[in-house]
Image (cartoon, rainbow, N blue to C red; front, side, top):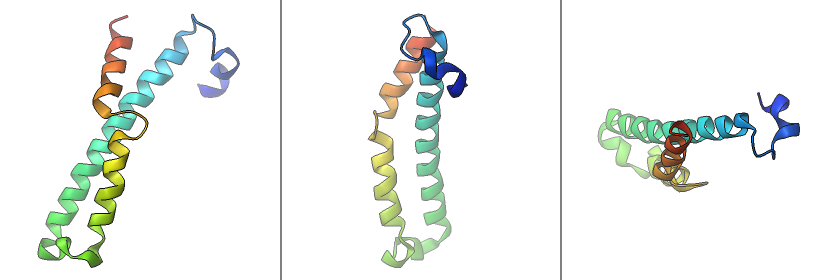
Length: 87
Protein backbone atom coordinates (compact mmCIF):
# COMPACT_ATOMS: atom_id res chain seq x y z
CA UNK A 1 0.00 0.00 0.00
CA UNK A 2 2.80 2.41 0.89
CA UNK A 3 4.83 1.79 -2.29
CA UNK A 4 1.82 2.40 -4.54
CA UNK A 5 0.81 5.50 -2.62
CA UNK A 6 4.22 7.17 -2.13
CA UNK A 7 4.31 9.14 -5.43
CA UNK A 8 0.86 10.60 -4.70
CA UNK A 9 1.44 11.16 -0.99
CA UNK A 10 1.00 14.93 -0.95
CA UNK A 11 -2.06 15.14 -3.21
CA UNK A 12 -4.98 16.67 -1.34
CA UNK A 13 -7.61 14.26 -2.65
CA UNK A 14 -5.58 11.13 -2.02
CA UNK A 15 -7.81 9.10 0.32
CA UNK A 16 -5.16 6.39 0.74
CA UNK A 17 -2.96 8.80 2.71
CA UNK A 18 -5.81 9.39 5.15
CA UNK A 19 -6.42 5.65 5.36
CA UNK A 20 -2.75 4.91 6.08
CA UNK A 21 -2.74 7.57 8.80
CA UNK A 22 -5.94 6.24 10.40
CA UNK A 23 -4.71 2.65 10.39
CA UNK A 24 -1.27 3.47 11.77
CA UNK A 25 -2.79 5.71 14.47
CA UNK A 26 -5.13 2.96 15.64
CA UNK A 27 -2.41 0.33 15.51
CA UNK A 28 0.05 2.45 17.51
CA UNK A 29 -2.50 3.14 20.25
CA UNK A 30 -3.66 -0.47 20.42
CA UNK A 31 -0.15 -1.91 20.62
CA UNK A 32 1.00 0.58 23.27
CA UNK A 33 -1.98 -0.23 25.51
CA UNK A 34 -1.71 -3.99 24.99
CA UNK A 35 2.02 -3.87 25.75
CA UNK A 36 1.24 -2.09 29.02
CA UNK A 37 -1.36 -4.74 29.90
CA UNK A 38 1.10 -7.52 29.05
CA UNK A 39 3.87 -6.00 31.17
CA UNK A 40 1.53 -5.73 34.16
CA UNK A 41 0.40 -9.33 33.70
CA UNK A 42 4.00 -10.58 33.42
CA UNK A 43 5.05 -8.66 36.53
CA UNK A 44 2.11 -10.13 38.46
CA UNK A 45 2.98 -13.62 37.23
CA UNK A 46 6.46 -13.21 38.71
CA UNK A 47 4.97 -12.55 42.13
CA UNK A 48 7.19 -10.59 44.48
CA UNK A 49 10.16 -11.07 42.16
CA UNK A 50 8.40 -8.89 39.59
CA UNK A 51 9.11 -5.86 41.77
CA UNK A 52 12.82 -6.66 41.98
CA UNK A 53 15.23 -4.49 40.05
CA UNK A 54 16.75 -7.64 38.56
CA UNK A 55 13.48 -8.44 36.75
CA UNK A 56 13.91 -5.17 34.77
CA UNK A 57 10.17 -4.47 34.69
CA UNK A 58 10.84 -0.90 35.87
CA UNK A 59 12.97 -0.25 32.80
CA UNK A 60 10.38 -1.80 30.50
CA UNK A 61 7.56 0.21 32.09
CA UNK A 62 9.60 3.38 31.60
CA UNK A 63 10.15 2.64 27.93
CA UNK A 64 6.52 1.73 27.37
CA UNK A 65 5.28 4.86 29.15
CA UNK A 66 7.18 6.86 26.56
CA UNK A 67 5.57 4.84 23.76
CA UNK A 68 2.12 5.85 24.96
CA UNK A 69 2.81 9.54 24.38
CA UNK A 70 5.60 9.44 21.78
CA UNK A 71 4.47 10.65 18.35
CA UNK A 72 1.12 11.69 19.77
CA UNK A 73 -0.91 10.74 22.79
CA UNK A 74 -2.99 7.62 22.17
CA UNK A 75 -6.25 9.44 22.85
CA UNK A 76 -5.38 12.12 20.29
CA UNK A 77 -4.47 9.47 17.72
CA UNK A 78 -7.82 7.75 18.24
CA UNK A 79 -9.62 11.08 17.81
CA UNK A 80 -7.81 11.56 14.49
CA UNK A 81 -9.03 8.14 13.42
CA UNK A 82 -12.57 9.08 14.43
CA UNK A 83 -12.30 12.19 12.30
CA UNK A 84 -11.33 10.00 9.34
CA UNK A 85 -14.31 7.71 9.92
CA UNK A 86 -16.81 10.57 10.17
CA UNK A 87 -15.68 12.25 6.93
